[in-house]
Amino acid sequence: MNSSMEDLNKFLNEILETNSEVKSALIVTFEGLPIASTSTLGSDEVKVSAITTVLEFLSDHLVIEMNIGELDQVNLQCSKGYLILKLLGPNAILTLSTTEEIKLEFLFSHLYHKFKEKIGIAFNKIKDLMNEQNSSTLNLNRNYLLELFDENLIETHKDGYPQVKDVLKQHFLLGGMKIEYSGDIIKISKIF
Image (cartoon, rainbow, N blue to C red):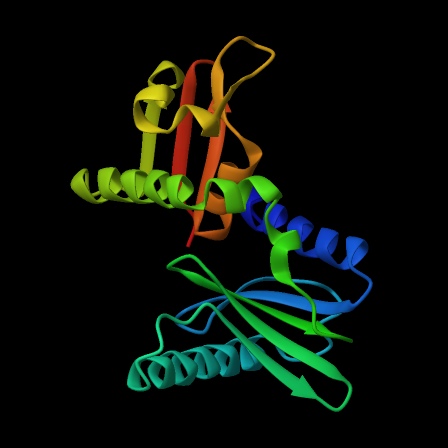
């Protein structure tokens, strides 16, 4: 398993550890393929991934047909709890099984809500640069981070180089891009 998938699995397990009402978690692609899951899933990952994608597709088309905005989250109340599907950017869906309906603010810190628009702009800038270069990897000098991203999304690492804040790094990871540092270079790679 590569380190990106390990990071996502670790993220999902942290959700379970810090939220007792969450019983299992899975991240799937819009094509219906499993990306990461917790060991507590207790079901066929491939089957659950495919069903998740179908539910998201139908819900999205219902929202469009009824002209009520854009789909963000699907909540299904069941006899033993809830099933929650949360869109994670343009590439993935988070599926949670819970004992009670919960807010998904734990996914991102309060900083995410404060800088949601700026995080989206940063994500799209990198995605556009990768598309222009027809590449799934982008290597940049860390000194250029302030030219690419809002200053509120950058902090200085103990090595003296600028780096993106964890909330941006987490958003990129959930959106299918991994951020790594090597000296004065930042490497951003598509992982799904």
